[in-house]
Every structure is written in structure tokens, then in C-alpha cells.
Length: 182
Image 1 (cartoon, rainbow, N blue to C red):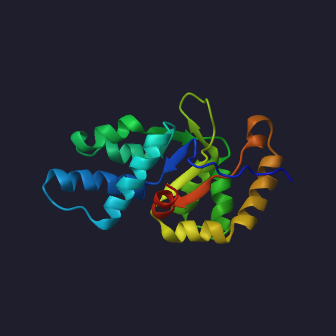
Image 2 (image 1 turned 180 degrees about the vertical axis):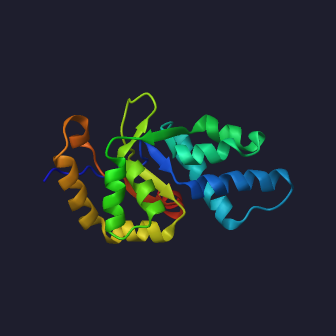
């Protein structure tokens, strides 16, 4: 069994789930309207700011990018400028299916699969080092089942050729964990 690399902190590449991006966007809208942001919006924005201050390899899924592109440009454009969408890489759907078989919801499985098999548009890299989420249940389920997930991931990638055989699982961090690491 090959060794999965541990997370360096700060991570060199990050995938933000749509919950983080939605809350950061909503915070900007509330502040512009003179309202007070919610605690969750502040926490997401602070985690986003901390991560963006230490790495420039910031990603979202193509679906999240599409949602942002339909939002008010004055609030969405700065986010779109910071974030690079990941495309579905080869084997992404296969890994998502295996994660669903392990009890993850379809939405959770796809974000986790993007973390391992999402491809940067220029094909320069595959996967990310960390997924940042506001979904406490997703993070807990991932941590609780990490050994089994890792075993299944190892079985899958060991059977693949080339670059895919060197991939590793991302870590899943909540906004609270990101803020506590600094």
C-alpha cells in the first residue's frame, strides 16, 4: 500500500465547497446593504481570507462557478477572479460512485471526488490538498470513515496508470479548523 501524504498547513491547493462561497458572497451583499452578516457568514469569510492569504491555488467546482456567474457581478467578480474552476477529470465519476456506495450523499460524494480527480483547466494538476467546507456532517463522516475511504481509494488508484496512480486523498477541513490552525 502506498503512503498517502499528510496535509501541510497551510495547504498548497484548496477546493472551497459551495457553502463557503455562498456565505462569503452573502456576507458581501449584506455589508453593502448596511446589514450585519451572520456568524456563519463571518466565519466562512474569515476562513476564506486566511486561506487566500497563504496560497493562490484556490478552486471551486464548475457548478459553483456557474452559480457565481449568474449573481450580481459587483459581488461575484472578485470571487471569480480569485478562484479557478476545476473540471471533471477522468475517473471522477467512478470515485464519486464509490463514495456514494460508502454512504455519502450524491452532493457530498461529488465534492470529495473533485478533491481527488478535479482537473485544472490547463491540465497542469489533478486534485487538491484540502477541501474547505461548512458542512460539519460531511467533515465528520469523512474523518470517521477515513481509513475505509483511504483503503478504497488506494485500491482504485493503484490499478490506474500514469499520473493517476500517484494521486492522494485530500483532507477535509471545516472553517472552524482553518481558523484554529492560525
